[in-house]
Image (cartoon, rainbow, N blue to C red):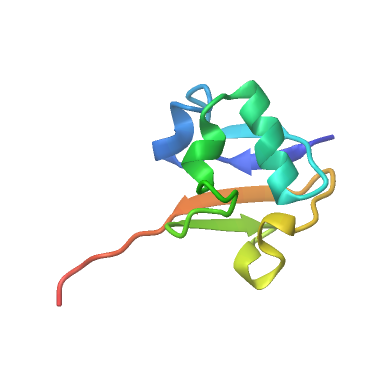
Amino acid sequence: MAIKVRVPAPLQKVLGNKVEVEGTGANLGELIGNLEKSYPGVRARLCDDGGRLRRYLNVYVNEQDVRGLAGEATALKDGDEVAIIPAIAGGRR
């Protein structure tokens, strides 16, 4: 079993035009590193130069926001689901 990663439309091109990919890792940072091996360029889209998740991304593990957990250090196990959702801002004042 692996970790399911739901991919938003803006990242699908980097991840082989897939809506969902599978990965492995003991935590979110390791998962991203492993995805980078299969899909070069994905880490730069998800993380800043310091390795932290980009502010404009919302990342959920099993529907829990990782900002309320341990961020990139959030532990993962087989069968977990990770959702990457670009933040949406704007609207009318």
